[in-house]
Image (tube, protein in one colour):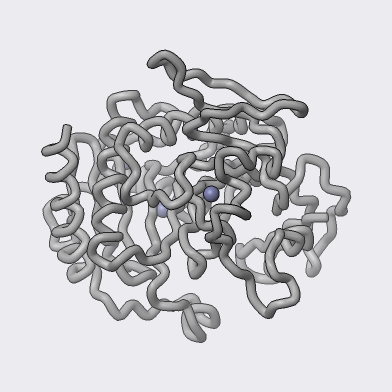
Length: 350
Ligand SMILES: [Zn+2]
Ligand SMILES: [Zn+2]
Ligand SMILES: [Zn+2]
């Protein structure tokens, strides 16, 4: 049963989760494979029985968007977005593992692990989804993140996308995942500490300052009314980019309907630009949001996109120091040009 183990010395956490190995993939083979075949895809319409009943299903009827859910006996058809428990969760609501002490520190990995299938279309891509679909995805995500934070054992909701085999996906049908942890993960904890220090010493949000600096820098990619995309100064991945709300906001749940529309356009343009510029590379997306539970550790929420083009190797894994062969300024130029082309096309269409 899943256990959350802490590194002896650093803050690094590892989910030891043997049941993840039970995923329907070629176990005998030395590596995982990607299910790209529509006929064996559990995320396609008509295959709903292959997954647990959905907690939330978006269905459009008579021009109204309905939020429905499946029952154990019956699955909802005609959906546009579908959210259900992961069949092979890395965390579970009631793990039977034990707490253990230094130096073998571990604790039961309490939590909920879900999948959101973001489109009924098997061969769709995040970079080509209509903006309207992106709006539905983001609104559904807000709804589910709120729901997850209402649960007792949830300290943090991690939202991420694995897109492509090299980015860790085992099913090609576009989907995102939510996984909850009982406490803040190290990546958020470190950002929150930096935020806290800057707030107390200088009285300013360091992330607002970054948005300010990068909005006119050579690393700027795309600017919309409420959001800025840029290649971060110390990008750990080639062609990495981040999307920040320009207005200081810690809570993803407080993003307004108008801002959701703007963010949908931003995501569609930049991911479309990434696909256009680099011919559909594998990538991961991570939402960095503040916990909605009572904590002083807050961050200015944002989204980070890591293309998986250059593999992390010995230096990265062994030292935590990354080699990036693509200067962020060059990445911004290339992704920026393609993203602006995508945006122009979107605006031309609408
Ligand atoms: Zn499919
Ligand atoms: Zn801020
Ligand atoms: Zn971040």
